Amino acid sequence: MAKRYRAVIVSPHLDDAVFSCGGEIDRLAKEGPVLVLNLFTRYLADIKIRGVVLGEERYQEEADAADFLGYESHNMGELDVTFRRDAYRSLGNIFRPPVDEDMAWLPELREKVFLFLAGLEFEQLYVPLGIGWHVDHVLTHLVFEPWAGRAGLLYYEDAPYCLIPHTTRYRLNELGA
Image (cartoon, rainbow, N blue to C red):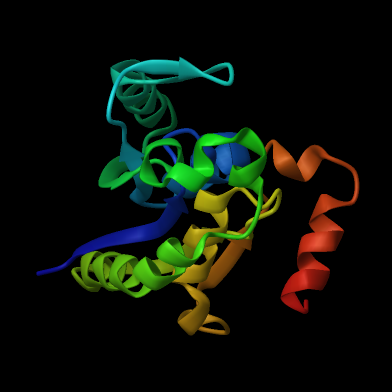
């Protein structure tokens, strides 16, 4: 029998769901089980790059947040953008459209995520809008493009990028919303 969740929150990285919709996760968890599905959670080394620590401590932070807010966490183990392609070694390039190799890989990623979700029952699915144009956030949004308009599919604003003036409006315009 499939596990039933009040909601599934899809998060590009280990911290995005909590930063973007921690209050909503807390509210939903009081109504029933919540799952945060983290996609890009694998690093090739423990490093500090661009002021961000990528390493084992991130998993502990996720576990602590899950305990505090009362949600379950699952990591898909996909490789973080910093390690995935040479084109993303430059900070500016991770805030541009995904490179051709990532777009060619998108159907495989989509299949993996949809296969995982097929084993669950859930009332609502929350997906990032891709505000800020971080490659991993945009790819996470694109995974669910075939489900646009599906009942129970909701979108959330990506923090901290949504705090930059006009980024939400620009992204919504880009999406045709």
